[in-house]
Amino acid sequence: MWMFLGFLIIFIYIIQKNYNRKHNNFLGKEVPKIPFLPVAWSILTGPHVEVLETIPDEYYQSGIYKARLGPNDYYTIVSADFARKLLTESEDVVPKYKFSSELPVLKFYGTGIVFSNGEQWRTHRKLSNPAFNRALSPKVMGDVVLESFKYLRKEIHQPVDIYELLQRITTEVLGQVAFGYSFGTLKSKELPDIVRKYKIIMTNVESYILYIFPFLNKLPTRKNKIFNSAVKDFDKFVFEIIDLKRIELAKRKKLNEKKKCNNEELLISMLEASEQENLNIGTKDLRDNIINFFSAGNDTTSMSVSSSIYYLAKYPHMQKRAREEVISIIGNELKIPTADQLKEMKYLNAVIKESLRRYPAPMTYRQLLKPTQFGEYVLPENSIIRVSNFAVHHDPKYWDNAYTFDPERWLTNEKRSNQYSYIPFSVGPRNCVGQNFSIMEQRIIIAMFLLKYEWSLPENSIHKDELVLSNAFLFRPKNLEINIKERV
Image 1: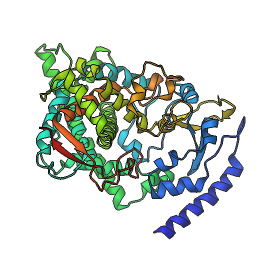
Image 2: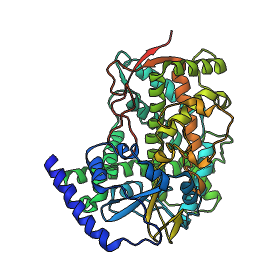
Image 3: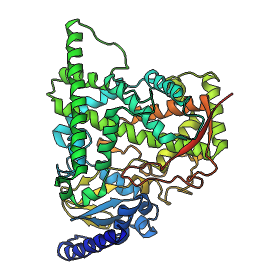
Image 4: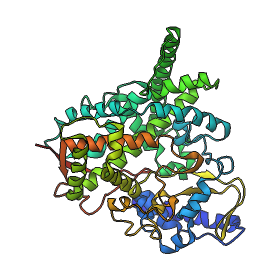
């Protein structure tokens, strides 16, 4: 196996060296390049975050670097100033990069709000903004957390895989908030069939090999057949829910019923908004958006809460301080905090911000429609470019002790010298539409866990020194087990 990987990397290296000689075409100073072999070896054998955590100072000084994978150069921004320039530009000038429709990422996500451009994206955004505002429901989120406590009674006698538990929680929250559906992830240890199929889909979506060698997606392999079958089943599940919600909305209109409060399901809100705005949004568009919301809300939120719980386990004095704050605001009795109470929890919010700084979600890729200057570098037309949130969040120019988890840095009144040095949900016209939803969910989960439990790292934890990540496109902790006990 290792010999095969070695030969594969050498072969790619030779091909790309020849390609570089023919296609290097810079209008300004050449962008610093990360050597191909370390990047390829890291992607094939281990967590890609290892590459990010060892970014040399020269790349921070330049603010941008490039790396070649497959037939393309990929430019990565690590500077807050360059991030501002790219992310605040019009979406028509720097649209999302159009991946091949054969790649798993588009087969599953389609052209929803994350990957669409132009008028299609503007329509998605117009429908999504009010829908997410109406979906903010501390009670729905809190009820799911209470249900998770019942589930934990059977598991608490042994170390708990906290990331796996949080994925169950976020999946259930999203099901109920997005389309009023209970997946039943907290009913038993065995995952529902549709959730297992989602996990199968994500193994293909996050496979670097399939991006580097896209022709592999067309091969009649067992893995591809399983993936395509899982996508088909997941589509059937979502399409059936959309049809049911259309019927429900029609009945509501017939009876002249209308909800006069928040806590409306995302899907119902989008259907209502499309009628009110006279926007023609088809079932396929709704399907794509629901899947975009489901994935973004599931994987990124569970990672952020996992890292917060991890650091509160690693640093008991922080856990104690956060718990005392929660008790001082809502009392020592287990209850669901209100939106106003959550805003008062300054230290808890600082913990969440610091977790998002340390392990943010990765950016999606953009494409330059014209030659664009970043400092002393001019990138050619059609360049593929992205912002590394991780790198921007750890730039020593703006962050003292950048790799130290320190919530205190968020409790001072001093403004950051560069507001774009912290971009966990992006900025500009294509910032994350669900950021308020995610923040509320994180606050509720952690606050209620602090009231119900105390937790610590097992003595033999692989995360004793720092959080160890699995080999995946999105940040995920590797076997993050936590000792949990109920508070007296």
